[in-house]
Image (cartoon, rainbow over all chains, first blue to last red; front, side, top):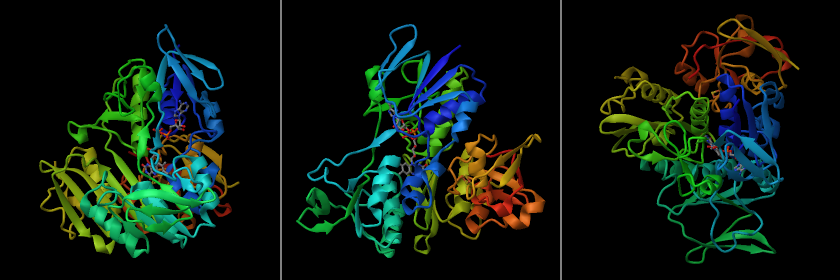
Length: 410
Length: 107
Ligand SMILES: Cc1cc2nc3c(=O)[nH]c(=O)nc-3n(C[C@H](O)[C@H](O)[C@H](O)COP(=O)(O)OP(=O)(O)OC[C@H]3O[C@@H](n4cnc5c(N)ncnc54)[C@H](O)[C@@H]3O)c2cc1C
Ligand code: FES
């Protein structure tokens, strides 16, 4: 009998456990997580949860009884500190001093927000958003806060900004680059979001250089920009990207790049006894061309976990799922299908100012991805096309008279 | 607690108690009902929670909203007249006894 230890009880860790059982695996499965909760979903934390539209129980990925019924041992509130693979069997030690013996291991350790390396970052009211604990901190201060400054114009920052604006707060988004969400979307989509947030009354400052955070009595009161201007803030929400949690992988001498655990298309690390999945991983993806990519999405955590579970059970099936992602910023629903890495052409379908449009990405004349804003039909058509290895001719894609799904060709 | 019954494509049935206000999707997923994948966790962004509502409840459950309607058009199993994304159907005393069939293909 094989015993599997899964480190990290998040989206990917939970899915590995569930998929192992779905596949008929009958060994012991232990899922150890550092947070004081069972596996839960993070996306609502920057959306519905802030407005009280979701409670903690509604975030749970499975009811507690499900794990019992499926003989999945979930251990919350315990951190794996050390792993040793030198013996016949692996040995993990946790922060309670407990030792766990196992035959195979899955690393599903996720990622952690990049910290702001400037003066004043330790002030009270400077917040990050990754887990329930962070969201509760934010929520605690939310109602009393009249002004919110978001540092970093990425998805999470913009979602929080949209929510704060909807709740009538004065909101400023500070982005160091010359456009929003620059890492994930085209300039067309970036510009749309800048304009759309501004239309709703949020101030978006691109190319912003922050010199320090200022405070009074240990509490943040504002953000100082180069040149001396101070933007008042009751809350400063920092969303400047995440760092993969590769501590244990590094400890084991597995291959990592900037903390991200390198895996192959079977979710195997450089040690065949260890698989890895989710935010913590750097993976080859067929849609990404030759590039290795790190994907921070529920889809990737789930689909890669399924691959990892197969590998643990000795079934070799490469990870090929089409990536997809969504971001709800107030009433703006962004859906992304595919991977735009290395695109050389874009086609805009619809008019961004109407707040319903798509940007289709092409590489060497073939469709590789799309961003759709309030254009669900386009998104679904592209997702299906990419899933079946089809394309949509670039010279026809902008024609709004024809639904995209009728334009799909081999 | 209102009850909801799920019928698998192979005919297997399971009846669960739903928390008032939880969606038909949440009730299924938390209890490990197979076939409702629900990758986006209810954000109406994935169309992997597709069900066919039993005719008897079709009126009570109602029609999908615009966004959901577009998502259903692209669902992996072709839609039927009573198709809904189960994350968009909230359980309440009114829907006690609801029966849904799970669409065979979700992804
Ligand atoms: C606020 C927010 C909003 C998001 N919105 C979206 C969205 O709209 N759409 C989308 O697709 N994605 C979204 N994401 C991203 C998505 O949630 C992540 O990609 C996904 O959770 C990754 O899953 P994971 O299992 O790799 O990591 P996680 O879910 O982070 O799980 C990793 C777990 O491992 C634990 N851990 C790490 N090291 C150890 C250790 N040594 N011992 C024990 N436990 C350990 C961590 O505490 C954590 O609980 C959002 C993320 C956040 C934070
Ligand atoms: S759960 Fe994703 S659309 Fe219903």
